[in-house]
Length: 103
Image (cartoon, rainbow, N blue to C red; front, side, top):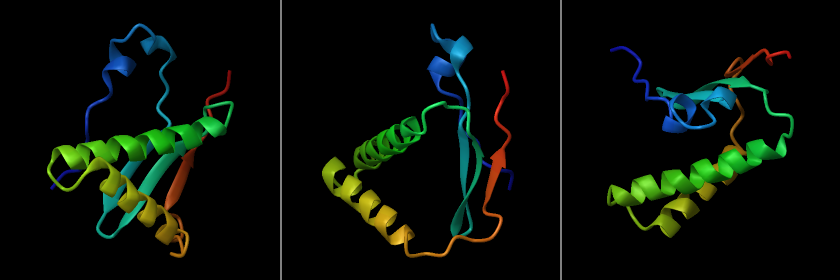
């Protein structure tokens, strides 16, 4: 079965600031663990924290809209997963960093 990719966000393709859009991460769940391609293209690493928080918040809403619990319960579960992940050794070569774009 081929990989199941999702579409780009509208703002990155047709929005008024599409010319400033940069892809920062591709994340995949493969068998029993995540794998990533990351690109350090933001000047302020604090924006990565913002992105991760907003992604968790929006994931909790998506799961809630699928009837899997309330947004608050699901966000708490995501936070539990975050905390538990700190205790799991990361697999070797799990993260591949793409070179930052120069210029």
